[in-house]
Length: 177
Image (cartoon, rainbow, N blue to C red):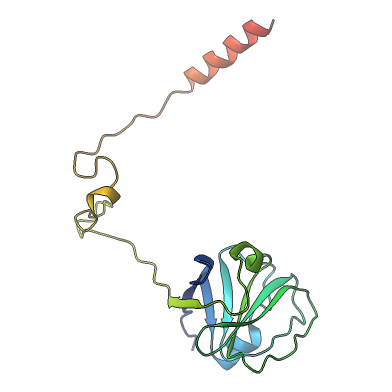
């Protein structure tokens, strides 16, 4: 029986930056054993959160990744940038879990040891007003955050014809000759 994958996002409260938007939670025995094995790469906004873990290995992996070790209060207690394939990291006894992120995530988010992280559940929902027409409700949004014309009628903009492009290219040809 397969369990549905759960996702979280990771936000660095200290630096006010995101580390990743879609991190898979690996809290089962099988999930922790597999981790990133079998993947050829990681999407820039993804990762794997291994719970519990205080060290990882990259034996059998095909790419380098960044490793963030976190304690039980979601404070960063260890960092390893660009963990290469076929490596084993030393255990950090203060760590309760490990985040495996795409290479250079630590540098881009400016994460340092001691930073406070926020790890929250990720739920992607399609907003709907129940009418089935694909439009979303804007009543709950403040006026500043509503798109222009959200309360008015929707105006269709016809696509431009390709004749304009052909005229433009002919004009350029006559000017260069």
